[in-house]
Image (tube, rainbow, N blue to C red):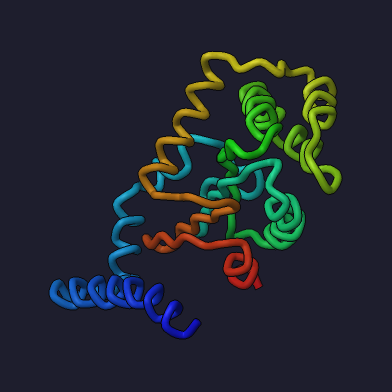
Amino acid sequence: MPNTFICKALPSLFMVSLIAMVGSIFGQTPSDLASTALDSITRSDWIGGLKPSLGSTKAPIQVVCFLDYQCPICRKVDPLIRKAIAKRTDIALTYREFPLNMHQFAKSAAIVAENARASGKFELVHRLIMQGQALTDGTVKSAARTAHVSTNATVKTNQRLDADNQIEQKAKINSVPAFVVISHGKTQMMGSTQFLEFLK
């Protein structure tokens, strides 16, 4: 067992050492390199011309949340994050879609949410879709009926989802929820636990 562990760990340790060595040659640590990669994406690219769900576009701290409506963690932390941000005037929160292929209803929820955004009803649909412990087909269709929006993707909706996918690929986002925090010219990527700590 110990030998197996060592064999599996050595390649990872080697890569960490190699990255650190390369970083030191250029005067940067691995975290610096990651930060530089994020900073190469502009604030306008992150926000994508979208109106914040909470806060103002002029807020000094802009947060972009990439989420999947069927992700259990997204559903669990969203009300906590919204409650914390609602108490502050220095933060704005904007949502972008990241429906995972493994989730049956995530893409249809994203389509309805983006159809709603196009007609100024994103907040209403977001709250309706996030109700309950789990996302169902019924939840998605009910939200669409309540907001009077289509469940079918339009050309504009597909363009919106494509734009989200492109920024996710550029930033190498591979899990949700992912929070991009843009503050004082710096950009940080955070998971839900780290972001909740940031909000305290």
